[in-house]
Image (cartoon, rainbow, N blue to C red; front, side, top):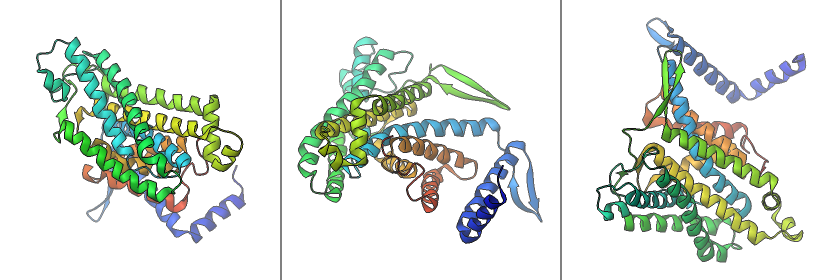
Length: 378
């Protein structure tokens, strides 16, 4: 049970930091308003609407599910960004284009497999350039999706390692700022290399007509979860547990944690730092590429800007969770995803990204190191 001193300290905090009290009141108002909307109760005074209204429980459930899906993609991609920062000490702005590389390479491989296994009546060039409309689903081409998933990670890893050898390794002792600037140049080069091959058009890649779905029952309806969304959730959670196992149960993972905590001490104690750096690129690049492939699977459309548009949300999730923390990147990504979608209860969809950044800023005002600050890779 809380003592009198606890209540006194809490009161002193609210008095000395009025911003904390203001944020607390705002969050409390939103929670009460949400409960009133779900209950169908509207409160007003003098003809002025104060809170409440009418919002279906199933609609809120849909927002939360959509937010979880987006958050898993952000968290999965954010793991690599956080590892790059903690071990290589620079913010990699090319990370969004690793996602795009994975998306295009994975769907390129999936389309080629589908062309030879589904006996589809489309020209080979349309399959090769991923322009054949809505060709694949988890039902009609599971093998193509599996090959695409593996290819998205493998090809992205190859590209990332090549870029490290050509660009980042020669600059590794120059400091974080030159590496950051170089990563911006790498991002632009990668993006327009993809444009040169595949063009700028947005194309639909998944077949949506016969995807089975599970109806999750709610109080006033149901929330559908289709097979593509379920595939994304299962794959993302499995990969996150894989990262946890790598960091906690393997010698290489322990070496990565040690190097993230103190790079100089890790070198003195004989840890193979180049092997750790190479593993960092492999894990980070592979997860980013797979995240891009899974996101396109769920959304159904592919565009050369898919990773760039997600990059700021990934940075927000990483910073919110505590930059340098792998688990913080996962947790921060999920929080950002759910907050951005749940905000649609109150605001138009055009402002969902603003809410994500607002949540990050509010947390950093009161906890500058992030929610998991001080926790590096463990």
